[in-house]
Length: 216
Image (cartoon, rainbow, N blue to C red; front, top):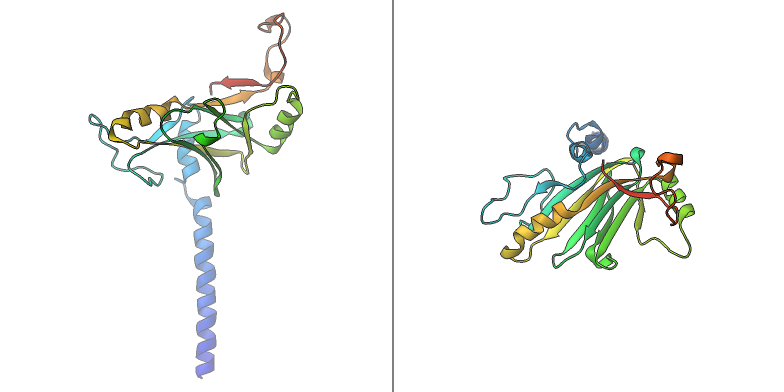
């Protein structure tokens, strides 16, 4: 009798564990207010949507935010992307405040970079599909390599989190402004550009390459 009881208990625990794991894994797919869905409201913006603004003397911090806030001195914004429209370019100018960019998909963050990777004070993160990445590599000029940080995304939709740290109370307004100063745009291909008489600067010399910075 005792062996049967132990055996039934073990089976019950295993089944309960499987149900629990399945329920946890299904939450992102079944949730109607997951992070990716909530971030999609920023897809038409050319700058990050504020998620958490650092409190200043005039403006208190918001009572809540839908992303985890690790530190009340960190200003946070998000830029959503849909790679079906083209590669997503996030451009930031570095300054005295620490800045980081983290790319997220439905399964979580898949890439992060800080202002330490900036080149000449500029940080350009370009998120692409595998096909877009291969096309960008094919279009590269060997004599003028791109300084972009190119990342292949696991999903077509996702968002980039911008974080800026205000180390001192006097830097809090600058941290909020630094988040808003980040540019979020969709790169366009030259195949989409006008040709013939309608092409701007047709007679101007220069090299061909993918267009940059079209507002969404």
